[in-house]
Image: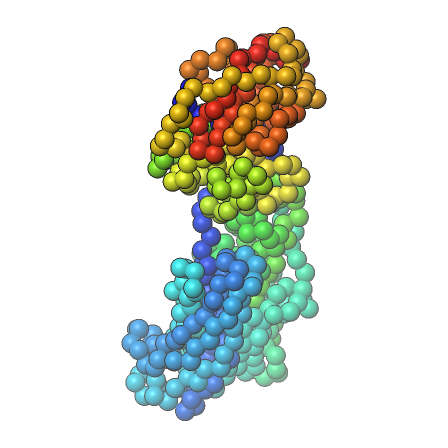
Length: 513
């Protein structure tokens, strides 16, 4: 017998919606403030800017080598060569923060006829992702006021600084959170309160008394964009205080995206302007119920892409594994495909990562996760698994084994082996112990189960045991695939080259299921 058959079939519990992929490093950049007003009478103006880099690869070197000041039309006014970088240790979906002070050449820009400039900085990394940028819009105003951001104030034609009353919150955020459901689209009532911070005329008649916000944006607390609201809101001062109410539509796509990012708060931001000054306000929506709390794992079955539960292939063949996942609710699945090579599978397997997976599971209660092409260059036994890190499942990870045949064949037929226990006709149970005759030169022993007497058909289940052992106990995950009735078992001895050097006669056994 020249063929080598390695089998392992598993079922486990899990949960998921499918978004498979390898994590990149830099995936986005946010900036604060995003709008600044400076006096057009200044020769130059120094402004402080804070950058937030969205990073998904711990340990990457993230930095920026240059920034550009451009006109509103895109003409380059000045290139800033100041650079900075640092090793990133921020967790996934968090902001890695940088700050700088930039001098804006106001006089030369005004002399060129520009009403403002745009300051853009580009970030990249050492992990293959990058070239992400964000822009600060700087506006020149004749009033000499300076706009604030994140709830700060801005001087302007209103006779006092235009500010957001955030109810005691910090950094422009509302002083209280607004609860929303995590299970459905909805509308939330919010009220923006704007006022002038000093006494004086309510508004400049030449500028007007109207405050406008053209749209709103949804982000995570870390700044990841989730969506937006295109509808604008307006209000008109009749005193020193202005209240603007709106019903904010929050689609399920925004809620699910927040849950996929692992957060339970959504920041809703609007930028208001009275024509001269701008101010930014943030409302915080709190996801108080929904799928994140009820996300649970069901069953995970591992098989190869062609539907088989064992694989014997030639060197260089293309093999992929498939995880069939059932789940309940919605939530983020974080996992990694891992493989142990023949150099370690004969003893304690050492796994290395093939691919990272981040899947947000929603909608149907089942999904398939396909592995990348598995390694097949080295003859011998491989073990592949999908190791789940989130959510916690508290169970042993599923594993699948496959075998790559050597180019050389054994010198002669396999030796006859004796199975010591169990005996023909015995009933299998989880405490059934298997014992067999030792075969010299065996690297592994393979216990195989068949629905009918062994022939050319594939086993329905099986186990692989280290060659130093001559006994094993029935695994519950193997037993899951043994139907009630009669099954047939045999033991194979396989050497270090993958050749079958020993084979027992098949035994008929009964299952007690």
